[in-house]
Amino acid sequence: MSTLPGARAVHHIAYTVPDLEQAVSFFVDVLGAELAYRLGPVEDPEGDWMTRKLGVHPRASAHIAMLRLGPVTNLELFEYTAPDQDRGRPRNSDWGGHHFALYVDDVDKAADYLREVPGVTILGEPETITEGPIAGDRWVYFTTPWGLHMELINMPEGMPYEETTSTRLYHPVERWGDHRANPESTPESTPESAPGTVPETVNSNPFNRRVIEEFRANGGRVADFGDVPLLLLTTTGRRSGRTRTTPLVHLAYDGRHIVFAANGGADDHPAWYRNLMASGTATVELPGRRFTARPVPVPASEHEELWRRQAAQDPNFSQFRDRTHRDIPVVELVPVEVAP
Image 1: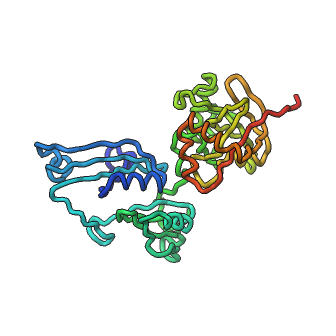
Image 2: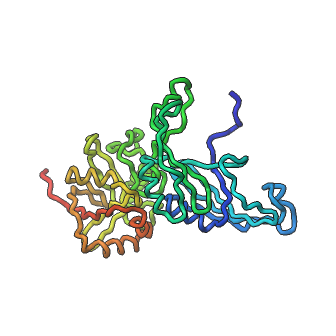
Image 3: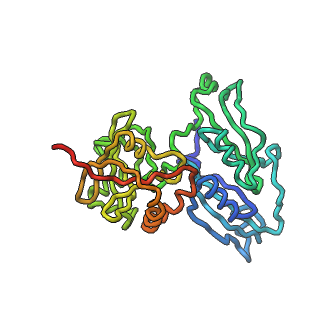
């Protein structure tokens, strides 16, 4: 089979949008993308660079934003101005028609969420394909506020087409935010880590493994987090029985150690929290100190003050509550006496 020399992966997909600010806001605030950078204006007021390099009118001008959309996709958005700009939007049946699909665990739940977003149109109701090579595929189309066609899809493993070919479509095993530099995003179901990395734990997230190693080697300091305080929490899986160490940003306040089960603002409680509450104890590592702790839920009357303090030391936490409909648990890790 011939192939493109050196090809590794699709780096990004790109769309031209009528309003860059609107599009970035939708992808970030509604779909959970991350804004990586902006460029612009990209233009050549005197020459023909825009035509030669981008195939557009020589007086065209573009502003660009690059986003990370989930674990495997980079998305580039363009807003152009051009003297010969065609502002018509192709239908899916037109040449140049297009859409892209987001894999979700529950198409109906995701569609219900999008129905509440102003300007989003769900095209009909979700349905499941019952015959043919992709029987079991549940899907529905929707349009963004500016008219981009998108799809929600859930295609289970073991599709009928797999019986007649060795080709397999990509099937996501990562969760949406696993790639993020966020020490709370470790999924519960992960294979064992590489031998010799963090040997007593199950933690396949490369970022977390590196944070754990750096924390232990440098007395609790981790370059990616600067002065933001971290602790390591080792819990026991309530189903697997395996231990896993998770780095967490914590709040040291009034002699207490407070952690927030934010999970990056996801709708599920993080695995470490579920395991901690199920077992009732965990091991806490701080610079120069290691102890067994029990979780004590912090009274709701204290939450606002603790969230304010946590967001002051790590601004990411100011966004987490806005991303989810669940009440994020706030827990104090209280040292307990353990018999020798």
